[in-house]
Amino acid sequence: MFADASPKTFPYVLPMPAVDLNRLKHQIDGLIWRFTRPAEFVQELHGIFSFYADRVYRPGELVEKKSSIQAYHVHSLVMRQLEIDLHQRCIENPGAALSLIDTLWQESMMEPRILAAALLGKLPLNYQQDICNRLVSWSGQTTDEILLRTLLEKGTSRLRQEKPEDWIQILKDWGTSERTGVQRAMLYAILSLLQNPEYENLPPLFDLTAIVIKSHPQALQRELIEVTTLLKERSPAECAYFLRQIIRLGVSEATARLLRKIIALFDEPVRSSLLAEWRTSSEQPK
Image (cartoon, rainbow, N blue to C red; front, side, top):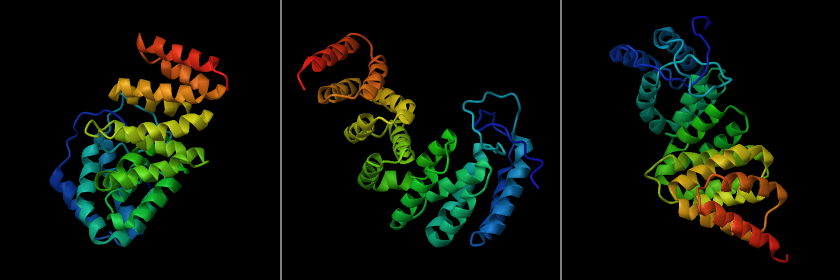
């Protein structure tokens, strides 16, 4: 059925494709009529993705990140228009939107699942529990970094913007989970916040990161280093203070190995100061 779609890696860097916006909007209008009939909607959606796949994809372009999930390689212009035109339907009929979102997420190709994440992030916030349940469940269903990052970015957009305090509390609950997948989702959510230059409420993010550093699941070392690197870039002095507080509380050997890698990210004289703090703390009687 989808033989004309060429699965490669996702996402990608492409020149702006020659997409006829009027044609695209007409195609999306046909989708909207099927909004309350998920199976028909998804079948029509695959037809749209197949239509644009060969016209948009250019082999040999730079691949930024690799994914194990097959993709149509539909350009972001098409995906963005889908999100825009379906936004109001999610607000007007959130129950039908949830059914459609669940159906989209079960698809094997990348783009329908990205659309599911985007529509999840457009639901009214009286559906907050439904949104959070899916974020936790879906985060545990995939190990694909591209899809997971997209889910935590797009699927949380209204929560982050309209109820930031609620979102931080949700992340605290995730951080104390014993499930590595839930903690990983929390770290990707922190990365999403840190990558927004307008987001300035950094203290809670340091607290959340500390929760995971102290428990230090070995499987999350790469994510912890990435989060800490961004925290350092956003606020070097605050990050150095944060690390001093962790050192003074005492750390396990596993956490110590992680901290050595994090401290190495700092330039002199901060690096030497942190190492001196570590030596002093290690010499204190426990």
